[in-house]
Image 1 (spheres, rainbow, N blue to C red):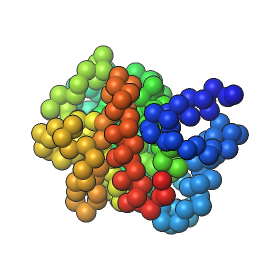
Image 2 (image 1 turned 120 degrees about the horizontal axis):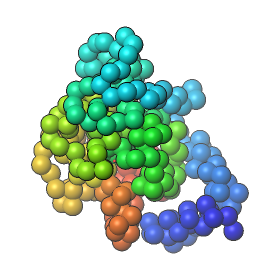
Image 3 (image 1 turned 120 degrees about the vertical axis):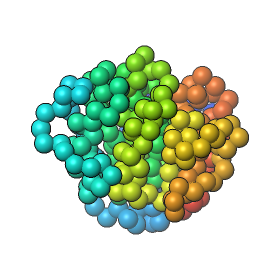
Length: 259
Ligand code: URA
């Protein structure tokens, strides 16, 4: 049996599925999620055109970005403009150590947006959020939700890799917050899923505890916000996968996706 398929089945089992009906070839290629998702109306109704991935900033030397990226992040009129501005960002010390700004990826018209913490080594090198081990798990969760990475939007509250993947500092979160806020304003998702403590705390600007709030709906303006655990935490604590799946089922119900 295909190794990807085996891994996916193991994930689904960990997430609490007891009855699996996954066409083998489709699951192995990821088609299953897209076919099912295409059959849905509520979530896809806003996506008549093919999902457009936000352009990724290419390697820019920290702090000395060349080019005309001037302007105000808070009033950038498109994701492309915001992306160009962020590629030149020098608002905090993390600019010095980055290979590139990890801006965000996915459908610019997504109903569902995942917001994580900060890029790690793989993301810093590739310029795309959630492409390492935790990213693979997030991708599997998205597929288990009958969606694909191309259908949702994925970003972080911190756009540049902290050294040695340390926790972001409060002033770094403050410096980066206008960027994620503007990204959300431009994408206008119906639901935001925050992954882990830093994403929850940075977006809400409250010292919330993730373990007490996960699974409970919050509001980010008029957008519904569902806090859940970070996939990296799930890699260390696989028993918590069932909690995340319970949270994602609430998100699916909100978006009209049948579990
Ligand atoms: N962890 C995050 O929070 N974001 C990434 O992009 C990768 C790992």
